[in-house]
Length: 281
Length: 144
Image (cartoon, rainbow over all chains, first blue to last red; front, side):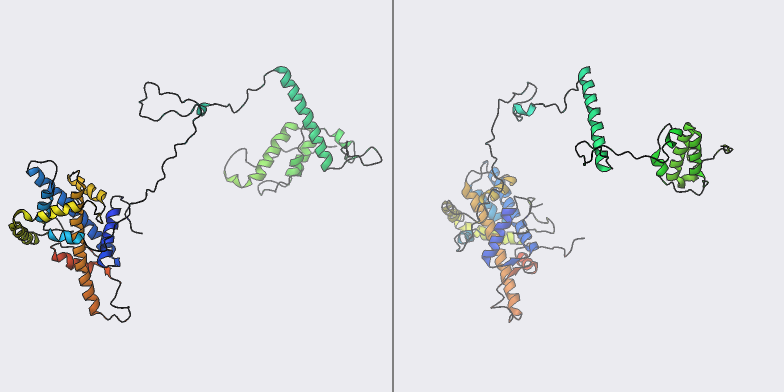
């Protein structure tokens, strides 16, 4: 049935009035008309109650009697004699009792252990404490090992494992060189990749290795001059390592943030190469 | 809004006018001319009410009566009150049905089987039916 009110006390009235209408012969009813009749019914019941109580108190009683009800009905103008006929009418509808919609609470909870009793400041009518297993604590981390020997050993083994893993990885991904005639897969050796000429690297020492920046093709910014990368190589050749660091960093930063030249950030300004004479070699 | 007094001039929703009360009082008085026997058949009827269950459930009637201050331990009185209310409602509904039938009979009912067997209770039928009882119902067509 749609249109049942959310007020639970009103629903049986709604259903009862609908049943009465059905008995009379109506198949449908307008919602407004139905509501009007419900309001009327409620008002009648309340009014009869009020009047009957007043009459009962008027005669000095506290509990109403049938006579009070009769006078109240007469006072309201409801005819008395037809009530009996109405009661004995055929085809009266009796409403079924509403089914309880909520399931009864399942009380078969297993109790493990004895619950704590309430401390004195908590009143008794409040719910009890949970079972003692609710208070079990498990730490989420272990205390770190602080023994010197153990730590030393762990770091050594970790280093060893890392090296081994890395070498095996490189051996698997890049070329391997086998010392024997057959392919050696158990103990792979990483193949050596000689540079040409082999002595060049020895003659050009570099403090730090910036291989990625060398390969990284920095897009030429409009504000910067073209000879940026070549200058970099030259400064490499001169072995000025600190300048290397700064310039390279500046270059990379500029490469990425070349559009923000409008901000006058000294670190983002284009590189101004010092006027240097080319070394006469 | 519903358990307030249904006295005269209560408002636009439903108000029992004075006129039917006066006429019915006469009736009641004339009934009381049979002396105190006006209530007599009813009190006899009360005895039969023990097994009878009215359409309006006991608990509902008891709740509304309690909200008015009427508390009793006798379920038969509660059933009597619910019967009286039922009776009133079904009287009004009957009158509305007559209105509906007269309205339906005047219209051409060739399309429907019989005589418009599906009766719908509308406000148009209910309003004059209630007006005969002295209850004026004026509902707005729309709510602003």
